[in-house]
Image (cartoon, rainbow, N blue to C red; front, top):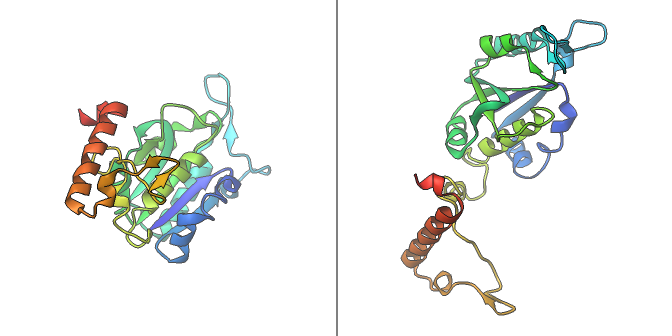
Length: 224
């Protein structure tokens, strides 16, 4: 699976993709993550990629030409399943969206900055807009990293235990049950006996009940 991320600040994405699961996924050849500097596609002398908004108002708007040139160049080399714009007014990222995107082959992700991007890019090129929450960040780079992480860990072979992702919170529309590890008794605080029983059916039943209870308390909207 390949990701092409277009950004004016590529340095912001160096660390998230150079460690842990995302790094291992790339070394295994299970995913490719390419970060493109939008300024490389600016024709002007100073490599500016923004301008004042028509109609006045505060802030700067990212120009249509650099984005269009970069997207068209990438599309000339391969087909893309989606061109995604990370935007606070997009659909909120959830596990279902991550599951769906993990089945794709090639994705382009656009990172906005400043006041936003020229609407014509959204109208002509973007096929999907995704938000990571109802708040505004300085740019789309961190949301892009969140999206890539959520998707890549679902690719078969990325996690050492491929069943691990299937038991994550939200996979079954429930939050995950509590988890424990050794020691079984820490300062008088004990692991529930059922987890030490060796009775897998009882353990599965306990985990389901705990997941249901936790979801009811913390995210009752998921049960609706």
